[in-house]
Length: 116
Length: 112
Image 1 (cartoon, rainbow over the protein chains, first blue to last red):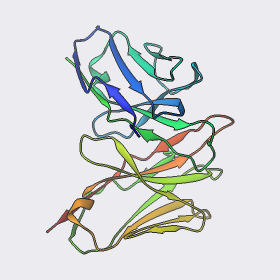
Image 2 (tube, each protein chain N blue to C red):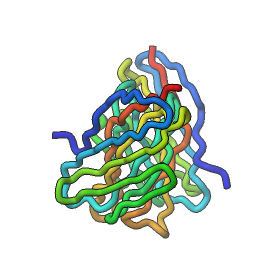
Image 3 (cartoon, each protein chain N blue to C red):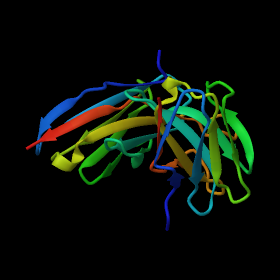
Image 4 (cartoon, each protein chain N blue to C red):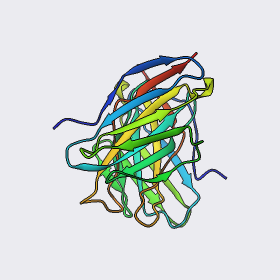
């Protein structure tokens, strides 16, 4: 069974540009979570999508946004890039049907974004 | 106080040693707990779930102390391949929303 996939693996942008990151969940997984992991910091929760809707967001400005498509894949958009947006962006998914307190999340390999 | 706190390390141990990591959490209502392993420049991968009675998987033992609000991970007979960062993760879910809070990780270096 294929795991969570993300693209691109690396992305280089300049300040002020926009970045689009993509995530495809494990088959049968309907919830998608996005995290930011800056160098030396822990994972910070960004966004949660389920059934095509944004269900919750972390403490990030509105220039971080995204969407979820009918096939449950997801896109993260970062507008007006700033230098401190340079980080590893991780997507994680989990199955909704079996979700419970012990169910956890499975991560994709991440997109490493560098803003120059 | 951080929601999840870990000693960042690094813990430098020789092969074959036993090493233990602790993690404390702030929310006494937290329901489930996990240890993830993250290799350099890679994604986190689930190592173990931590259940109320503690659990063991080969050389790895995880324990939960709800009264003191900490979880621990014990690694016996360390291997070179155990070198990684170990993330403590606490499920602080609300209604319909699974909120996983990650510690910043404890780095383990196992040397020959």
